[in-house]
Image (cartoon, rainbow, N blue to C red):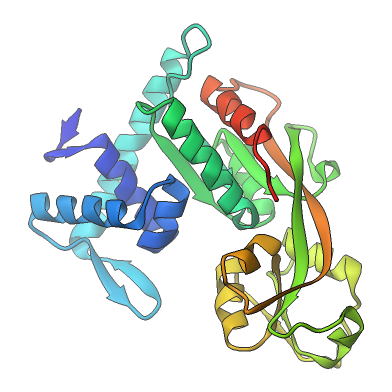
Length: 284
């Protein structure tokens, strides 16, 4: 199907870039390379004869053409997803898109699952929203996504949500210096967002005295950026492994990772297949 000379995959990639705020994060969510996403955006701009984004110090900002296309793409893709979902999955083979919400802490793990899903079902679109903490559960409740992948205890779920245990992910208290745990009282702390899973785990493991200098990050991405400037940060252990923090790892522990869905309504075969692939993967 083509619209405005654009195909559905191009619209899908464009919407993911808008939601992620950058080409690199969109590529990670889509399970593809950054050059491939950049080429797709360039192809769209060439067909429309207009620029879609302006680059600012804060990231990508939609141009007037981009804002119009974004509204159109959202409406078009939403109609596609609803139509395919209403047709149903045939004979246990996924026929509708994978629509999932993913916590930033498990994004690299989920991205590996997305790549495996796309290799197994190359004709299906994938739509992934990245959100912190309880926002994932809210996306599932409001049926914005069919499945959520998040961290924390399943006991926090309300009665209308069902949880599937996927495994345990290694985490650590990370600092920009390799200090021992008892030295944490002497350094400034960079805190994850209030009421996020990361913040609750941090507060459960160390006392946060009011006299200490505390800085709260808006999200995990902001925490990564501030960590580079010399602050201590509480982040998933995988962040250190990809170089986001210079000197990783004291006080290592694990957190449970769960897939979450509504107890009522359809459980798309695409979601079931994604959970199956994630369950078979190593989180370490």
